[in-house]
Image 1 (tube, rainbow, N blue to C red):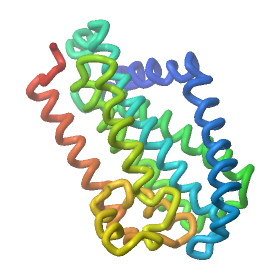
Image 2 (image 1 turned 180 degrees about the vertical axis):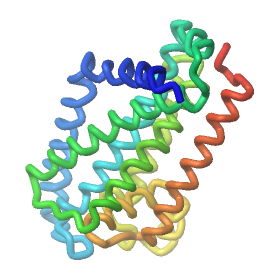
Image 3 (image 1 turned 135 degrees about the horizontal axis):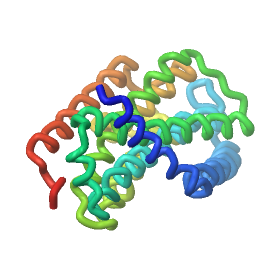
Amino acid sequence: MNFYGVLAIYRFEMSRTRRTLIQSIVAPVITTSLYFIVFGAAIGSRIQEVGGVSYGAFIVPGLIMLNLLTNSISNGSFGIYFPKFVGTVYEILSAPVSTFEIVLGYVGAAASKALLLGFIILLTASLFIELRIAHPLIMLAFLILTAISFSLLGFILGIWADNFEKLSVVPTLLITPLVFLGGSFYSTDMLPSFWQTVSLFNPVLYLVSGLRWSFYEISDVNVWASLGSVLLFLLICFSIVVWIFKTGYKLRS
């Protein structure tokens, strides 16, 4: 294992957070605060509790997951896209680092930044409402696995993308709608039976539901099904990344 090579990639990627502090940290905190003002005050006044939990506390796992997914994908995709864009990807490919070490450096940095933001959102939420975390270790497991999985997805997206417009396609047109339709701000029990069945095909539902269970022990689907879906998605994404490096798909174009 070339730890120096992995560390060099990791440090370079993490340094971008310091250079874009307002975009990376301040903006999501302001957005989260606005979510609590709008959803917590406006909707919370009409929906007092969901599953025995106050509405303000109920939406916290959904807010964390929304930011975690979008930032994991964004960090992972931009991290590998820029070396392709400026041509430095050839230096990385010719360096004495393996495929696993390259992925570890880029995806590790992307996941670290997303997790940092997730914990900042958690702290911000605690300023507005009283939080309780019933299973902190399971919460950490969900956050870490989700951050790694979607950073891998972002890494794949960054390799696939030919321009900046394509980088925003998946987060904007796919992830954000799936998060809003995945029970982030409501329980699927509130939906008609037909839409409850349809929502089971939304993979984000399992992520939000599993994270919410770690907080309040309430969920729309079984927590182990949620954990299994995250692990399966992680395996699929990692397999695709390995295939990309073996075939050189889009790496040299």
